Image (cartoon, rainbow, N blue to C red; front, side, top):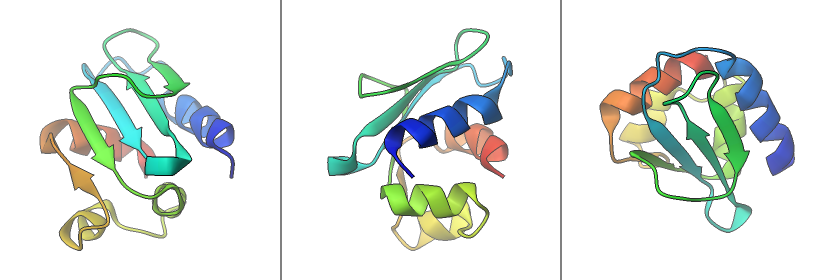
Amino acid sequence: MTLDELTQGLRERLGDNPNLGATVKFDFGADGAIHVDGTVNPPVVSTGGGDAQCNLILSKDDFETMAKGGLDPTMAYMTGRLKVDDIATAMKIGAFLR
């Protein structure tokens, strides 16, 4: 999938949910990034970087696999495939990726 397709898919999954209450960045390294502003309703999901309260660093391929249910976020974190700097916020957004 392209970065734009992943962004659109995340936008659809988050919908109008006002419960995130934070900004999140999915950092795919050289493959780009997706930024989520979950402090507004509906959340604003866009490509690109920017500062975020919670940064999730993983490969684009692992993100796709996780979004399809083929990679457990906890297992990805425990094996070092996913790096997170705010576990509480990551758990909130993880609920939408299932």
